[in-house]
Image (cartoon, rainbow, N blue to C red; front, side, top):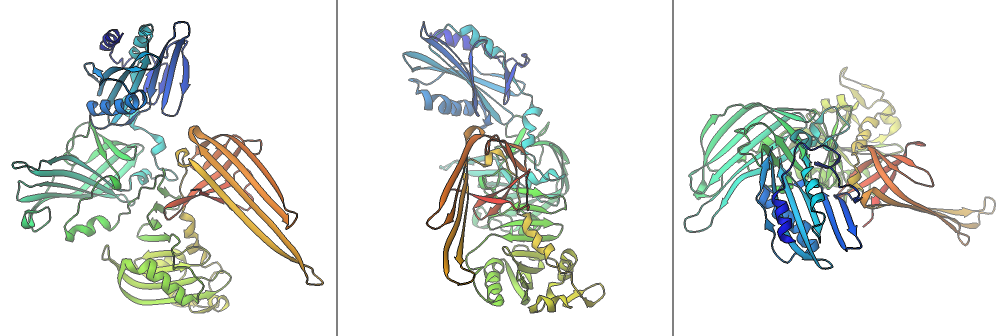
Length: 639
């Protein structure tokens, strides 16, 4: 049996022109007639059983993953993951000669294993364009050899353009699709690490940094123990994204040679600097398993050798060590750039229709527009406590603001006594990271602390409609009576009663789109309300009324869910509890809505978005059909 199956595998060749019957991920094929089909998220399988002969066969087509770099590495990895872990074959795979066609490399192999007697496992792995996909065939007989052969002969692999265009990975809520690549991306072309008497250590790495304002920086470093100098490429320019195409338009590019201090991997003195050719290039792009994949017809001098086929693959910040620039050059790449951190959620940035751009950061959500930067700080210990306005504002400033600035001048606090009590801290200071002189305002009214970073006070006044330095301590009546300075006419004027609303509205930009892959787990909302009751006439205590509720969504694999709502209410001693629950499937009709097949015996759709706190997210839901006051219900992920 093993010999016969190996012979059939030797006859196998991928048919890139087979009639399309069914498609799963990158593969189209003709399913075997009369076989039982089973579809899961990562695999679609077909099986046939003959109970009289006690024979069986199963064919599984697996969803693609990121390539390990070449067909041999991909086959070895897939064999371990798909065959060894599940079936524990007795021997290593017997390989067949590989094939290559239209950019796809194919490798097959088989080995026996025990399952109710002698059986055989076969793996066919296909690798190309930065992706890897596999077909697994399991059987204990030769009876299905013809059906297997027909199935493999029908396999059709998608063209490159189809592979890379993944609309679900494109940014949302904006006409500018550059948001998805904002931040830093890096790769190493080649690394040699031969530590012996004659070996040397060397590496070559490249790094892009894309800014939300449409500019980019590119750096490359070539280091080798063999040479006295280290080469550094510095390039800057603009970029444009149109659908799934990225155009890089360099404006300045130089290559520098630096000497080494004590022969180490460092920057000592700049020896030479000369201009490089400006390569304007258009790439086809996609985000594939968190990697930025760039496809172009031929290799560029900027990117170096292809990672695989005609692709370059750049990883996010947590997958590479960033190039450390000479001290004098650090400001170049940090002045306008906001790096998006990895959160495990699909969307880490949002472009709003009014021009503001939000990005998730470790300690805040950063909101930018032009030369304005607003930090929506996450709650932090020591920044909100019972105290007079001045000591509270000073404490928040020292914890949230001061560590990132130097040379603070004209610092002051202000407080206006109204229903929501706005707190202000402000001053002129210098950003340590960039060396820029800025005007900083720290504000809090009904929510968390908001830090606004502007070039000067006049810019703040123009954007938010009032001059914070004109605010004096006192009541809102005094403030509204004439403490706002009209800069254009150099006089004080009466302020709009909602003068602070434009600034407070910045808190609403802590808002990020949802994706089906983000929900797995339990999300809960708990509410407790207690009323102490007293007789109107006698004043005697009349008991306590309790209202409690717990709502839970438990999202599971395959876009299924369980939902339940528990409500407890009544006077102490006569409390009643009611519970409703349901289950079904959920979907994400768009990036801002979540739909359930059954909530209280009917389908239901919610408006949905995520907001961020440090290290976690909150799910915000609002009944789309009956929005009521427009206030979203917030759910946290249960541990």
